[in-house]
Length: 201
Image (tube, rainbow, N blue to C red; front, side, top):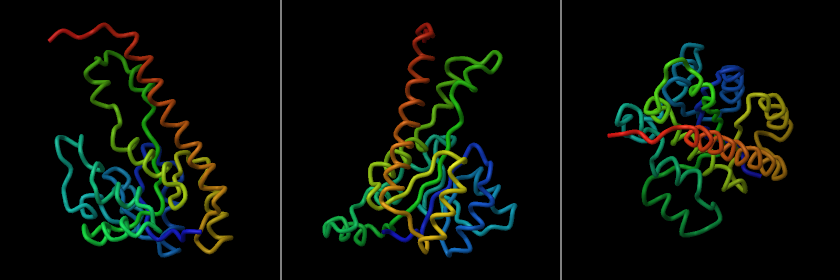
């Protein structure tokens, strides 16, 4: 079982994230967070790195590009008993990432805002969060991914019971939920676009 040593936190729904991060900190987990989550954690006195500090590149294009970076996705997707992957991680000075805690702003909530336009909805479509969810879920042999705040309690319980690790079965179940979350998000987006008339430029 992979001991969780490094985590990325990026949560629209901040329910329980401060308590979870505090427990991760007590377990000596290095935490990296995107802007809003980083702000919430530092305000609560929890030490964590901003995502740009980890990647070495600040957010670009009004926040459109912030987590789409090889240092993140190599850390999530690398196969840890693959010699080539290990060598490439060293060559490019990447670090393994063992845990992703991400939840997304519900697209339906955005689409229901009064007077919101198609372009405004599209601008709010999450790319980086979904990419991290899918990368972590694909590599469930080594990486844990939590997309639902209701899972925090059982996650913490198992983490404490297993000296900072999760069983393979748990990682697989979390990956199932993560891929289902990704699929639901894309389905909502597809349904919304189906209701829209093509824009004129």
